[in-house]
Image (tube, rainbow, N blue to C red; front, top):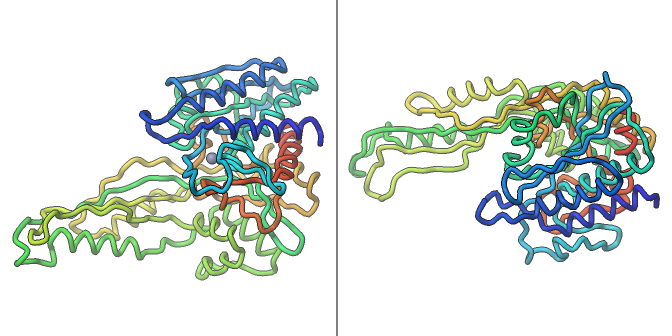
Length: 435
Ligand SMILES: [Zn+2]
């Protein structure tokens, strides 16, 4: 094992052992993020790198370190990872979630794939560059961030709003979620590169009518009207949209597997691809999910109003179609109020970082091919997009064909193959040097 690989594995383990659970609640959150950020800061400064430590609230620390590139005209690359993790139900685990045990080549712990793996890897890469005195072509901005699991309010979002100068000159970013190998065909693997992310939002539907005695119901009462709207929305399938990322994915997988994908039967066709198909299926169309219902309090009283909350996920350039669709489906007499909406993002399918990722994978895995996809979720890349930065999701991990990395996110007994972390360190170094 090279020094770089050895440090990457050690750092991932050390970070897992720092309990940095983000409960999303100021009353119960500890200072784990700051302890993790201080650990990273010390490791960076040990090799002579300068750092900026930022802590907008006690315990919510982030750390940033910029390595100057040789080409002042090349845009800077943000290389980022979040240091917080989601909570654990320790009694459900068969391994200590903060023990970083290695059993049969698998490293267990909260954050093993989300995302202390990449935090440890990029820390090792930054130290390698400093130790060897390697000057990258473009500025590299290493950012280790708090609060991603609760929307980045005290991490990336706060930094973008309050310390944008730390990211001056940045044009691209690399972080989660993607980069894992998935089976393509025969002995070939696809490494999925997230080039876009769905937007997330919500809506409240409200039907109003006359309150009254339940012995005299009308079809126009608030509850049946709301229920009709909820049923229509719940049963509706928004059309498949071949966004650039989806189109490229279907082309690459179709070609490799000798098949073509149709819009009509896309869900069933994607099912054939196994776990990766379900991720892609969720990213093929807008979605609206009724999640919360509220009406009435007593069985013999017709309530004057009834409401429902919808979780909304929109494709890039799909937000208007989603809103129009909800208004149509809600129908007359049901009010629609829009709640917070984090817009979708989309980066070009071509560019310096995409080229670097493609070349770095080809060098390590000649049977591997980089395939773009649209992530049906959100990452800190959304916040950096407000600075005009194109964000990509690529944490390189070559894993066995039956190892579902997506299934490890937020899961019990979250784990990552140690061998994959070594691969990740080599490929990530190669990417930042080629980018
Ligand atoms: Zn994450």
